[in-house]
Length: 420
Image (cartoon, rainbow, N blue to C red; front, side):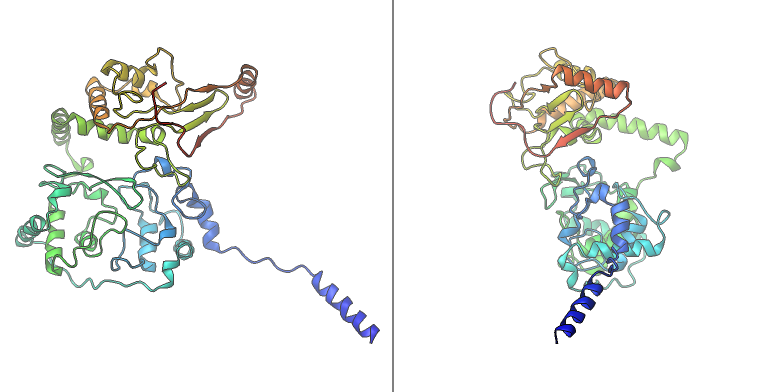
């Protein structure tokens, strides 16, 4: 009996010592980790290293909520929806089309992996019945204009589709992040595509996580098709198809509009220049914290120089720009000069590039910053690196050729109180 137990023990030991094959990592995950984490983050929460610089923000896959779908409101997208978004990208965003980079089977593998990030995909999608649609015609466009007025689309998109007369064109998504209503005259920026079918689907399904609702209960299917045809009719001629005379006239018109509404122009410039990426405090998911837009307090460590909390750009008179003169604001933007006469580092505050702004654009930026709601937040003074460590860091950078990192720390370094 003892010999039998000894033999069993020896066999068991021998079996346990045989190397077991490692479980294969899902192919979709490997592709996702290679191509997608920069924007969407390692766990799909939309918090990749580049997320803070992108408007609109990358999709948070863990919520199971998608704007571009062929399914009912509240439903997850179909596999074909996910694959189509990856293949062609989302126009007007930083999401590129991958159909010329990845083969179809790789894109399908990534889509399958993305579905594992949200429990909502345990439920089957609920596709909408699209039907044959309504062909575009002068009569359909006229009817669509009436539907536009009936559904009060002008409150967000303006009477002309460009925001003219809108109650507001600035919104927040479900995560309290800034959004702008679409310019309906620029169909190449429509995230889900510019065709009547694409636009009809946005009306029919809504854009989950945004203020754009489904109109399924407010309009008939035919009305939504007519509305889609009307929106298509609003599209202007893109610059890349214009003649030289048309381009000159177009930019002259834009210049005139900018002079009429400098605050709007200033907001466009601030958004385009990415000012909020540094001058807003954000959380671990790289989302602007509530009430912190342009209020500064983001702590940036720049090797080998030190740590530099970003300035409060709101209109608060004690801690922001409220008591700064126009010239002082312009000098900070174009020369990197603080109010006390000290100079900012030329990175990440790229005042050398901003010095090329036209006088009209600088005036517009100042006018817009005057309208930013005041936030009382004292920002700490910079902390410079101890001189020997600074010299060593400069030696490594200039002589050894090491590229020192800059680190952006989530959270709010500022406190309520008087300015520095």
